[in-house]
Length: 232
Image (cartoon, rainbow, N blue to C red; front, side, top):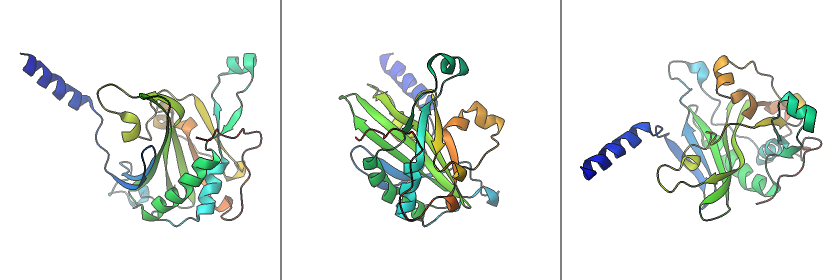
């Protein structure tokens, strides 16, 4: 009976598990990775859903994109009335930009039209906890879509079961509590999100950037007032 119970439990856990996402590793070390994932929103029957990959972007331009991203804790109006707006913070530290920019550029150059680039950064805190920043990006035409799934989130590694943060980097492990910004603001492409995007909370963690308005050479200026992200 005990063996039968264990077998049934295993079947139930497998049934509840999220589906495996096919992926290709571009870069991986003991704590971080950049990889290419199959994007299920790209449909073979709809050519217009395909991404503009592979795509060559200068590493310096990718660095400027990462440097221009900033985040702010989301506060409702009553919180803003009492405490004011939260401070703006750069999404990535200089060290993270140096690590990620060449790998993301390499990934975009290798990506197929039905793939998206995902990234995962982690910093161990204890033997069972780590701080994670993760998300993904893809390009359509001249527009780069950047999605931030988690930002400096303290993640407790489960004693058993699936480790979701590494397997699904674009999936938030907790409800979103931040808004995403970009500098220069004139490079941000305004979107009209669908009701599904609103229900999924994708209106705060996704930003669309006009690549023609991001310098490919030289150093971009971070969002004014943004505090530097702490180095790992």
